Image 1: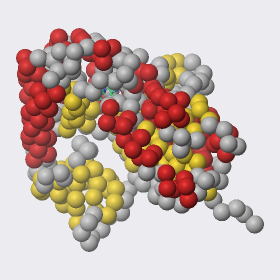
Image 2: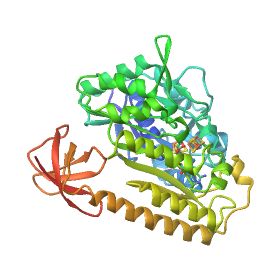
Image 3: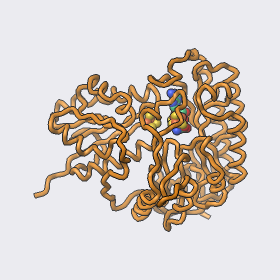
Image 4: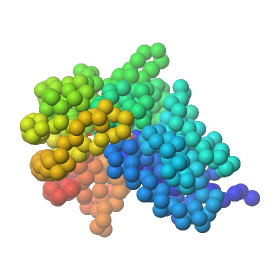
Length: 439
Ligand code: SAH
Ligand code: SF4
Ligand code: F3S
């Protein structure tokens, strides 16, 4: 008689790298007889894959854990684990603050999760927040899923050496490391065999990629060109890039590599040189704007995306206006903006905060401008013909939804299935999506 699979519920917070990690952890636990389920009720193991980037993100973890008390009371064999960046940043503190937790695993130790789970099952409080020499992905077992959706994430680089003054990532994810080209290629080919047609290459600073290619060291552009030669892989994207690592080859690839999609997330955080310097970003506003110009010269229709922080310590109204001016000049197609959150252990956390009401007001003004730009970029697609990769059925009968080359959601009424890549003429721009017809 075979044993019934144990149930694993994973809840993922934070960035796409956590989404990818959660998939890989589920695969690794698959080897231990676990099957992933979509609700915590009745689970044998609950794993929270957490984010520490802003205070709110970290606090969510504790309120979520509190909600599992009745589940643990009903099933004393339930294992509760905390993974991800809160696990790395707070480690033992989590075990102290929330006794329901059985195991804590940092983002670089996931390949040790099966062993940790076994220790926790033995009654121990298991903790591993090392930065091991070996890289987790090359040691994580995979259990291939027979078929998957048309898009996938693939982490190629991890960690960050930039130490922006506000950011926890260099502490939670450790130093920059790149995976070898051969491993990435093998994984990409496997994904394509499972039905994937679009891969988004991930890294905290993905364009700092410098991976071993059989003795040589390749940059991200070389990796992309090699992946573009994989039959059946039709689209390549990457995120998140740092302006300082946008080299000539990568800019050129946006012009000459057809499979590389015309969308680039290139955070700048602020438009004030004074603030950029205090943030330790390593470039000026002008350098960023010139960089965007060069990228647009290589690929004129590229859609730019970015991240901004408002209310960074000592940001004045004048600094903020410089941010607004930069946004006006760049014209973003998509953007994310955040109110500064002081993170323990980062240099900026020691500095005087901007009045919270003032920071809120700036955030609103910036978001209003970004929303207008986003809408303008979307409206400008009407009348154009673009590629769309179908992802799923739409809400209306006969309708499907996919993503355009520029990452807009596009609705169509057509007899298409997930994975179909089609040319679509955009006919309409709705608040959060486009509508189009097959050409
Ligand atoms: N590696 C990426 C960013 C990762 S964090 C990069 O360098 O661009 C994602 C975004 O969260 C950042 O771009 C920044 O805008 C925001 N962020 C990071 N730390 C923050 C903090 N302490 N307060 C508010 N926003 C923050
Ligand atoms: Fe954080 Fe800066 Fe590194 Fe991005 S580049 S992860 S914002 S320290
Ligand atoms: Fe959050 Fe860690 Fe990603 S702090 S944004 S989950 S790298």
